[in-house]
Length: 254
View 1 (cartoon, rainbow, N blue to C red):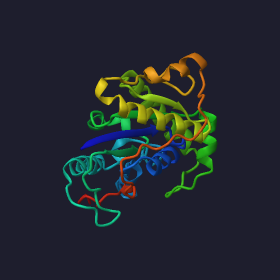
View 2 (cartoon, helix red, strand yellow; view 1 turned 135 degrees about the vertical axis):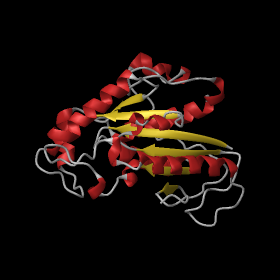
View 3 (tube, rainbow, N blue to C red; view 1 turned 90 degrees about the horizontal axis):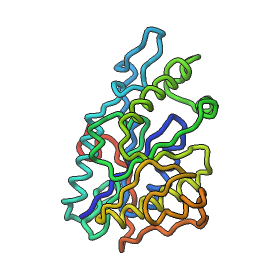
């Protein structure tokens, strides 16, 4: 049994959840883990000297619990031999590929995850666009005045700088592009990576308007744009089990 783990990271409100959900619905045998499900309680999140709750740091997350969920999925997906009883069960063993999408804003700042991913994507948007999108969202607890400029954006810049210095084959995506274009690019890239996985074809740093992922993406390098606008056909595994979202507690994680 083969497993294929996909990271969908990026700046706040950059389109991570939208992309992850589209892929979750399209890929066969696919499960989804969301980093936001692992936030600690408000009382356990530290406060900085300005009175801002420090949610945009790894210490605000129960990352050990998240890793337990991820490793449990990998183990059960490889070893499961029983038939699914309901949509919350691990899919039955088959000859296809099991996909796991891990979505979150600090995926690539947590090194234990690094060796888990088969593909890593990171959505970026400019400061003004990010601030505008953030202002339309309702959070619990709500953002206090000055929170974006005083905590959210500075933490993003800090983590992004660290991530770029430790370049590890992350595919950077422009989050201002059309959602369908981003999805089509990533879907085709994942499918291509799966087909070439055993041949050693690897993707480096690329963008929607830039460098090809591998040999089949030469057209992108020449034209700088996505030529095939039609919705790609999802790979077929012989069966289409109901996709699942892995929440804390699903695999014995509390």
